Image (cartoon, rainbow, N blue to C red; front, side):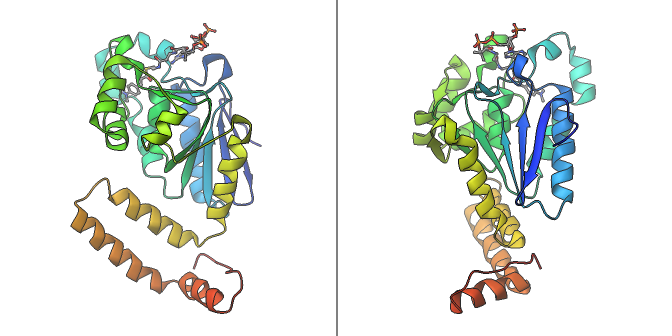
Length: 259
Ligand code: DAK
């Protein structure tokens, strides 16, 4: 357990579970919550025993967006000078361990963007994704226009961003936004089971696999394939590769040490 005011953070069996916890505001993302999220991710990154993170909200909402009350009175100079939310969003983007979003209920605006910054999304049947900022006379601000378009294609992204239409879990799975849909009461356990599976693997191989998939969004195909090959070669420098292959030939479970 932890001393956060807007998060509940617990670590067990190599997995840190971070629960967004501003129930009265449907987990709307304000500066306090995002600063605490940065602190929780810093702690998870620094702790060698933590191999994977699960980020979730409540049954009703993963997060219903950036906090409209906090944002409503801000001026342009204030937004620009403070570089509103850039530092916090960058922290999620450069988190090196796997981070799984477990989404039930609303993931709207900044909530949808936060889920998309994670490595993959497991959705409850109740999940609803949307970028409704147009209703407020603004736009996505932490990557939604770019990530949603890459994940679901231009037509669906334009539809959602220009009309504020929400996508349900089934459509999100069909469109490639989420990796799987599960019953709401099984959501956190399903995400934790995936995280525990990752936590038992070589943490070095896991980080390199994450890096190469991320590169698919940042590079040309030939650059990405080259990076993959170089990282693949470099994995042979680790004891974990020797252990993984020895365990296979000796028909026993591998004991990875992260070396
Ligand atoms: N902010 C603040 N409070 C919120 C909120 C939000 N985004 N969403 C909900 N709440 C609050 C409601 O005001 C209400 O508070 P009380 O009235 O009880 O005090 C409480 O949560 C429960 O909400 P409702 O009573 O509205 O509940 P319903 O079930 O009737 O409706 C809803 C649920 C999710 C459909 C509805 O609350 C809703 O439409 N919420 C707003 C969704 C939205 O527009 N989200 C996008 C926000 S804009 C940037 C970074 C990020 C962003 C922009 C720039 N930079 C880096 C520059 C992102 C912007 C956004 O996300």
